[in-house]
Length: 322
Image (cartoon, rainbow, N blue to C red; front, side, top):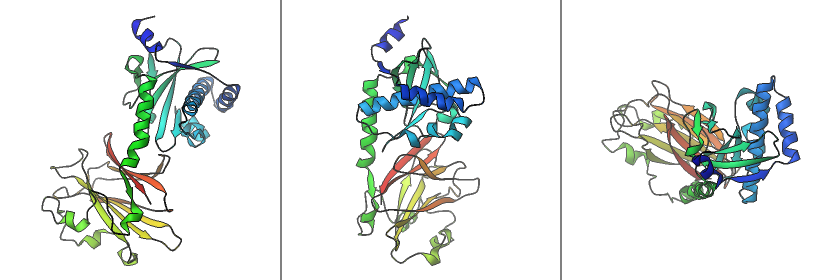
């Protein structure tokens, strides 16, 4: 046993694997077409179950049934072991065999994950060790030397659970004329010389669909988003428009615009709506000649959602409550 493994063992947590967990893993494995895929699904399922048990012990709410790893089609199509953590997002629970020093991180798990936990199994599958975690991954292999201890993971998870609330945008207050810092009128931003769009010869209204059907009580604000995707030093602009509906729901229109001499958005920019569990609800991606992209949906009072703007692995997320 080398020194790095010895140090790692000082911070691991060993948990028993319940009979129910083994039966569920066997059921999922039996759905697969070959023995190699069956073993992959079996270990993935057990890894998720063990991490779920651990988080339940720590009074951290989870919902494994809504995770992709509990979806038979997703299990069949990919190598996934995700666990939905309420109000945080999806953790990836990667299994390894005893004495392995390298953990596989499939590319399909590189996005929409808030962290990665590594779970070690022996041949008996009677117990498992949670070895540690990393916050992100962008390669197909992870050395166990890179893992951080579980104590750090709990602190990290607490930060994730608290951070959205600190920057929560309360949309219901917008109807009363109360706006959070950074959210300005669209006109005030467009009127800045460095942000004025190159296609400004068109009126603002012409680039906004459904103008004729817009209710008089709509409220709209905009915010600059700068995460390194700007061209010629121009950020993109996120516009949020809300309007009340007769059924007590709120209609929400999101637009992401290019600004200044950046006539078009860079291709591949994602505008994504995440629900309160962190799952993707809607997504739009810019093409070669898009000067803006948009999404529209409705929500219930006090419903939480997030909006993520991303390109090339860099993202900024805004958190909202209706």
